[in-house]
Length: 68
Image (cartoon, rainbow, N blue to C red; front, side, top):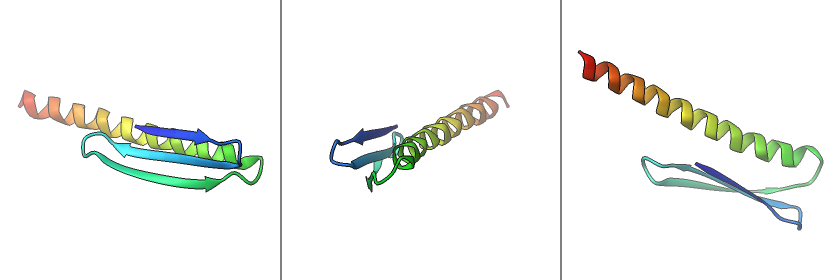
């Protein structure tokens, strides 16, 4: 789970969370150029991709354990 808030003041707030543990990692970024919003959104998408992949792997491993 993640969140991205872009403020009109040139700042961004990012939040990265692990649902299974409840751990949340907030991050503040200054948006100081054209690439900054793209970098922030890429960080959020990367986090979502990695956590989704981990959940898929966990499901496969659980199914494998249950079958044998």
